[in-house]
Image: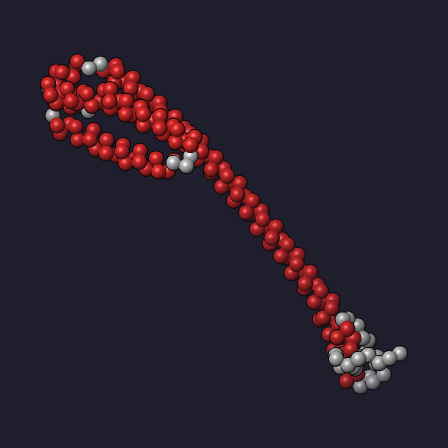
Length: 191
């Protein structure tokens, strides 16, 4: 804009016009993203008000006066007013950016805490699973495999000719029934 005010050439306004288009797109994007965040939306509204004030009070009148009266007419406008209005825009932009940065840091910390909790929960879950599997393995060993090994050993002893060897019924009821010579479903003999 400054180049246009000094030279009065329309091609100097292209960066300003492109900036205005980008400004509109970015403000619309921010409005959409902050619509449900009243604390941040208020800061965005302040920024938009100050941008409008800069355009209304300085930028648009300065461009219009140079367009209609030439570059020398730009001196009729107060550059101090333009600076004050733009400083207000910059301050509102910095305020919004600071608030967004604080929210981003807080969100990052929340994600970090949630990730830490998830890792801890998974570690505890894995530990519980290992303990549970160890308990199941121990139970299988005590209630199933050891009694089967004992009955198998006793059966091998009897099969090798030691017919007087006593097969000790141990373990769960199914194993006791198997060791005592009854079928699993056979009722125990009375007495």
